[in-house]
Image 1 (cartoon, protein in one colour):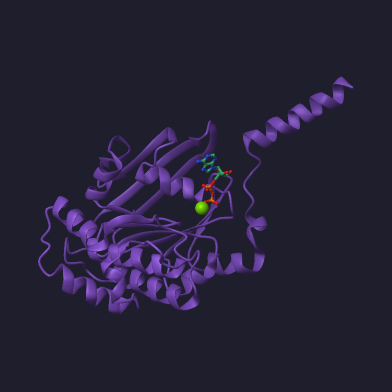
Image 2 (image 1 turned 135 degrees about the vertical axis):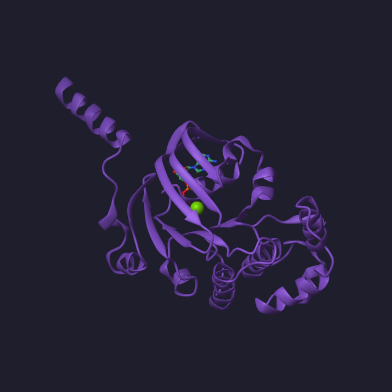
Length: 268
Ligand code: ADP
Ligand code: MG
């Protein structure tokens, strides 16, 4: 059983505090959905977990099975068992998918025997055309094909915990269903590399992803804080009530702004 534990995480980007104290615990086999409006800090959370340059941790911890992830380089976090499916997958001209996966598996000390067959079998499961397997990574693929490609890499690498940043963005309905079902299956099946099901942190602002990828826990992120946590019913409630019903308590910036507005008023 693996555990990704985020405690008291505060983080800033470009000098502005975006995450203002996040606590989340994700275990093998659990699917946690983090939902929030645009600008809430969802992508910032995924960037901090994976160590994207330019994002600064101000306070708090991120550990995987007790190991401090914040002290590691991004590639070391990946080898430790974290995997990010990015909101906008990067095109890598000149580098083929099978080369990337061969390298990634070797670096993890895993065998690459049968990789070709595994790729073809996985491609079949998620409707990824086999002719794309020999192409440079993500180059000239549509939004939906890129997300299928990312899901395929996830299935081959079998990390401990997957962070999906808006897997549903840029996806048509069919691709969304195929990718979400595959991730759901990974969260139920024991994988070959470590015998554990996948733990999932699924970041999204729409409920539709969660129709196929069934969350055990749903958290609402607003203005850098988790303002509500519950079961799948919370996502359904969001669908009818919207995010406004879960607005965060006024944050310090807002309090400062209203204080200075009052100051202006009194100085007139
Ligand atoms: P979400 O994914 O929930 O839509 P983000 O985490 O992308 O939100 O963004 C949260 C806030 O941080 C936004 O106000 C955004 O403009 C700001 N932000 C995110 N990344 C950067 C960056 N690299 N430079 C400057 N501001 C950023
Ligand atoms: Mg985002």
